[in-house]
Image 1: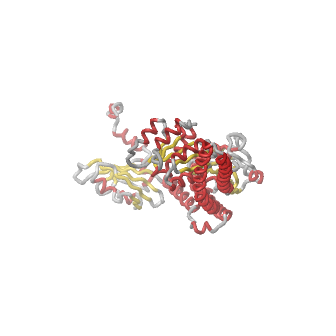
Image 2 (image 1 turned 90 degrees about the vertical axis):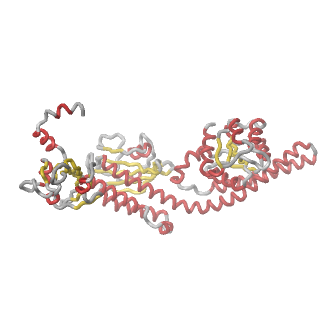
Image 3 (image 1 turned 90 degrees about the horizontal axis):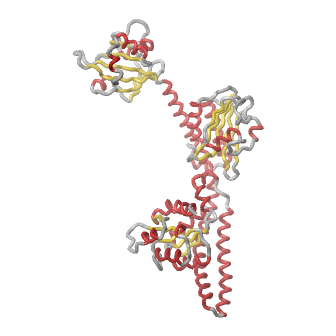
Length: 514
């Protein structure tokens, strides 16, 4: 402002009028009676139907517009305020204008005068209304009653979603050709679920997410980025889709920042799609992705019904089997150290029983593994955890049976192999007989404190402290187990009261660092 101020002194009244006339907004000075005292060229252009505007009623000149708020008496509000007052007006020709009123002269005996500016916001309102329609259309995809959807087959649900999409495409977008594909994470392929106006060759094409050789659809699935092809004849990534197509727009279907599919539209017109088209389609695709995930959730119910029953059986059988197995290990240790003939016979018997106990554990595990997998979209948030925990052998040394069961259920759902014991001595014996990738130990065990178990596991059994996970709990720790654990470099600690939230991240941290 300091550099501009000297130049303002050289401006004449005529210069100021010229500046106001060139502003891309309708500007007027209005008196206390809401009558126009002066108006710039844009105001004259918009509202002067012939004659002079001076002295005319402001709202009459505007055609008695409808005030849409949020302020419904802008001049009264501005008269009592130093700040500008803003509201929206709907003109008789259906244009929307933004009205700003500010008091700039209150010294007149006849009352204050106001500086008024009007901006045409019809285009912005149209965009906002279209976005709202798109959101409503997306909400329709998931608005059907859940009990009705459950009674339908998967194919019937998908057909219902397709019918909604076709209706939306006609009413909202007017696209010539459309292809929607969904990513099957079990096979890695982009499976076509809807095609309108595409050639048979394009419909039969097998695609995977890939930066090269998989067309624009594969590229979008691999990167998660929207892609506008302005000229199909010049774009090397384009693979023929609709006959005679000259441009395309491809948007990823994203759920929780993971690509679950693609939405591709094509036009016979070159450069037919703008950034605004991309923005609108992205909004719709977010809702469509939610709908597709909902379908997978409903389909998963059939698998989960059987899986939950087996999991219940597993939870009831596996813990007693572990107790038997742990007890037999202790008996075997007694037999091994006794040195008598009868002990040798007993040793062989125990070995036989141990083999059967292990076989029973494996049988229960195999039953769970033979169940149909839950659809891939349900596993999006657990992919990293499952890849880290799959096949890892975990020893759980926890006195509380409910916590043992909960830990087992969480880890085995992610592919872990879990053995549980209820005492510290039992856990130390297990470390002699099996190799474990990680061990979780409770803060207070029935026969020892966790610091004693940790000391023995590290010093006597040679187990790495970085693979130990301590389950702490709220309250005073009189034996200072947590401090002792950290002193021995056991840094993976979670709260028993937050087991369901903290267990898996701690195991991922421990196993990923190896």
